Length: 168
Image (cartoon, rainbow, N blue to C red; front, side, top):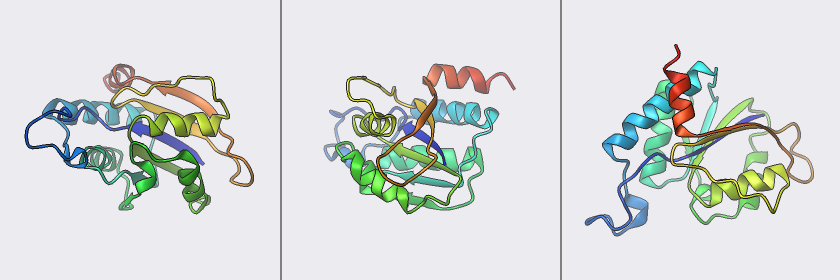
């Protein structure tokens, strides 16, 4: 399975009036525009997930919707609480097993859970992987039996993704 871990794009700040409920914070105009540019970079790289799993939080959902539109994913979005900010990565690994037959999946989530998932899949504990907002990591998983194991192909910042997208 080709697996793309994506952190949501730039959203309204935690302390913004009217958004006391963290789950309701939307992307900013800048966040939406940058995510479109990032998605164009993914398209240049040939990324076209068959399925997108996303946190139900508004900012993650909006990020996933942009990916779906720009990359041409035909399946609907799948919402999962296993991509919430403090979700345990073992639970998402178990959920991913249900999609073992899918060739390409994008996961849209939050820090620190998206980094924790990368660490789990790569089998590392002392490594600090940090996803910037809109950052993307590409991994492959060959088997869903036993312990999680993935191969890292790349981890790119939003700036790198945007640069790739402008080289069309």
